[in-house]
Image (tube, rainbow, N blue to C red; front, side, top):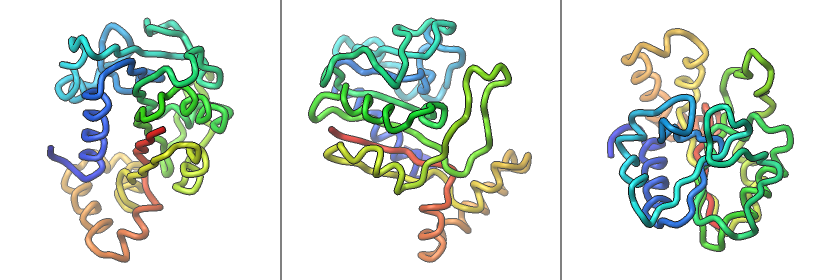
Length: 213
């Protein structure tokens, strides 16, 4: 696996979820893994995890709040229709900033996971406002490590991994983030010393979260 440590964290956790098999629900379709069920496709995710779509041990299902992009289930994350302890694994990528009651949503995510089931989530912290122009997909919240720990306090395990450090996160607010060498230089600055690592772990673009019920 290549890339920064947060990318490795994501890849390792996602691989563990798919390898375990069973019913795997992608809430919001944020993996962008299957072009038949979503508005966009992530080619890197297809390359990494696309093989699991043909694995008979994996029942990969996509939910969305609207049927516009052909999900398997139209679901409100505040009131998921799945039975208690019925889901083997789940993804919830860049969804919780768009829900009006994150506490209820997190409780639903925890409720539907089987004991021992694993979830992988992403939430933003230092990130731009990104509601849709039609106002049907609003942008409500940002999440600190403390807030994440509270929301998923009912899980047996929770592991939180920062995505980008302070200066690289701030760069994302400008068009200059497209310059690769600049991203690399600021990434080095963010993580090169113990003092900056302490800062960057809490002043970050967002967090990958691995939960286990």
